[in-house]
Amino acid sequence: MAQKYTIAAMAMELMESLLLRKRATVLYPVERLTPPERFRGRLRYDPEACNLCGLCQRDCPADVINVVRKRVEKEDGTKELTGHLEFEMDRCIFCGQCSHSCNSNAITFTREFELAQPDRELFMMKSGGPEVDEGECDADPDVSP
Image 1: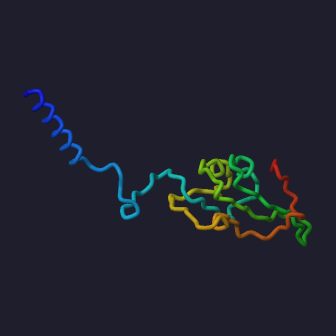
Image 2 (image 1 turned 90 degrees about the vertical axis):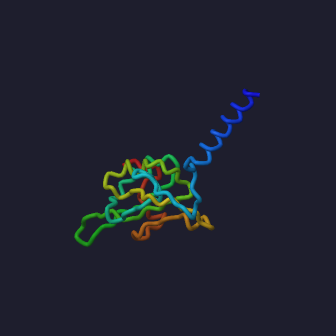
Image 3 (image 1 turned 180 degrees about the horizontal axis):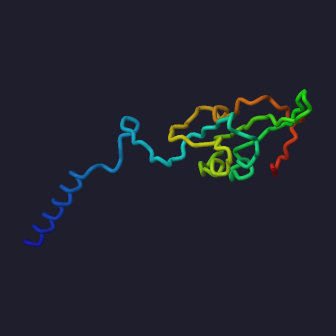
């Protein structure tokens, strides 16, 4: 009988410790935790800082980024590179390789993680650069700068 009492006492101690312990989960979305400092959430693109080099497109393992560029001759005879970037964010694996490869720091990640959208088209991001027709694009599809 003494052995049953010790097992019951051990069980009561265990239950008491489990009930008094801090919960491991939170009641999301009522309670929200802040992500760590180096968390990779929503992608942020700065078209002003971008030099359209194409390193981000070349290094992206999920083929999310498409660099559309064109060389335009100015009135003074010099050539200027214009274009824009297109992102298919529904394919992104948030590895951060594009941000690491970008030599002008035009691509960074925020700590925003609630990215659900009802439509696939809402995941498509296009920078505010000038429109370039696909037929006029002089960029190599493999982007070898």
